[in-house]
Image (cartoon, rainbow, N blue to C red; front, side):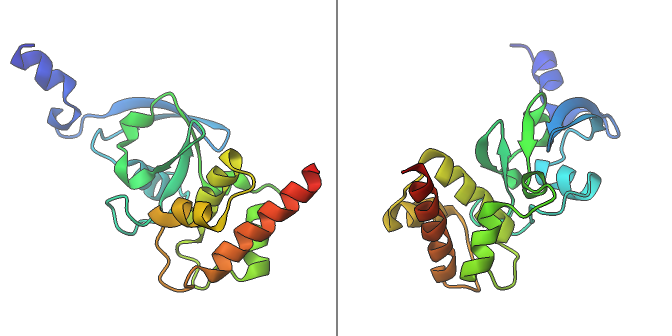
Length: 175
């Protein structure tokens, strides 16, 4: 590969002010955007589309506050550049609610699974991912799933109770 092609392929070397086109679906709405190629997904969502559910915290993928689904897979939005989700379907915490509160959110409310609320959107997205692949998780499964999420307020007791309660109710309905 010659240097010319390498430079053209590298989005960080585009001329200042140059943008790239993105087509994506966010919370079931179609978007066609022109964006700076160096913008992170979390900043696109929060700063340009006013989707403030995912939070900016660590910026290095350790806290889970920025968790979103990309094509149904849980990811940290702080680790992805916006161009990496071109053509993809993104779901933020805002995409989970309609007129009524989501069942995971309801379980968090019932069991006191949050205090300040900063980590809650990431926790809820993680729980949705966990329960979609493991509808009856053990406490060890829950703790493993939450390992990528940081909560400085609750001590995790209410969060774990919320997940266990929700899982029990789902299993009871299936039986």
